Amino acid sequence: MNAIRKIGLAAVSATALAAPALAETELTMYYPIAVGGALTEVVDGIVADFEAANPDIKVNAIYSGNYDDTRVRALSALASGEPAQLAVMFSIDAYDLIEQDLIVAFEDIEGVSPDWLNSFYPALMANGRIEGKTWGIPFQRSTIVAYYNKDKFREAGLDPESPPATWEEMVSMGKALTKEGTYGLMIPSTGYPYWMFQALAIQNGKEVMSDDGLTTYFDDPAVIETLDFWKSLSTEHGIMPEGTVEWGTLRQAFLEGQTAMMWHSTGNLTAVKNDASFDFGVAELPANVRKGSPTGGGNFYVFKDTSPEEKAAALKLIEFMTAPEQAATWSIKTGYMGVSSAAYETEALKAYTEEFPPALVARNQLENAVAEFSTFETARVREGLNNAIQAALTGTKTSSDALAEAQAAAVRLLSDYQ
Image (cartoon, rainbow, N blue to C red; front, top):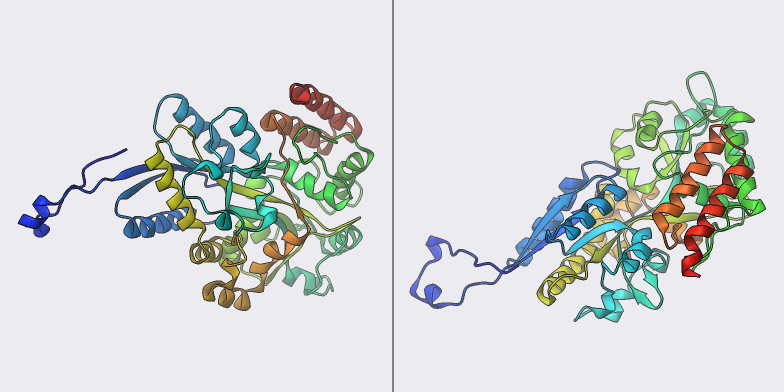
């Protein structure tokens, strides 16, 4: 949207009055705040720096809860005619956004550099590149990592520098760590249960979906075995609470000593670092058949119904926020990873990771990472999988029955896209 920028009285002169008015492009950006510390302050700071460097562009950042909330609010705004040019939404939303014809491929925005598009970690681009085009640019990105309480490892006679590297070690160490008032391990099963389940399935040697978003493998024997294993951590091995573990309160449970180990997003890293009253470590997730974690988090998307001037301004903002220096600052302040190798070559991030090596764990895990679960009809397919996971963990259904139902529902939903 173009407007006239007022000229300060102190700067008024005959020359200034004769000069053309400065055009201003206004951007509305929807942004999710789901985990971590005071992320609004961090984003506000980056936006303020951008506006200072680009006085002809004004950015209105609208913070909108978790990723699902952000998608709903942004798309509702678009449907009602409210202006919105860009958003950070789930990296796995790409199929749905393309299907609804709501976003533009970055290759179709004038001035986009192929070198810039190729500067990001390939694993982080996997969810955003579909059918030969780039629909999402990584920013608030993560992998799942294992946080562990080194003090409790010492109390249990375990080496605090040797967290579990395999499922077998996770179970045996979990038993040594489980005492009155403390579980050995907690893996969250609300919020994003499909994400944790995908990590376990990958470690058990099986992906839960195809690369083209058209097929799911929920009823594969290895996937059923994975859900049985997750449940066994509580019902058989007793190292985790029975039923569900809450995503939103797990970090606090870890900080309060209710669990010695937790799986969670690397986006919690800085908050844990700031608030932990004990010595803690961060490790890559353990392996069974193989190592692995899905990537996670959000990508930048540019909405299709924007003017060329707004697209150019949105591109400039995204380039600014993902530049190595900004990505380094973002990673240090939040725990999310820098989205390019260049970010880790900045003096700031090199110094920080030398002082605090856990900040490298999520980045290093990209070597074994896969794209986060995403298909056409993502939200509905994902809901079916989430329901199956929770039904099995709470004992409402067997793993086999729950996953068979989720698979049948996914096949129905995806049949139109085959």
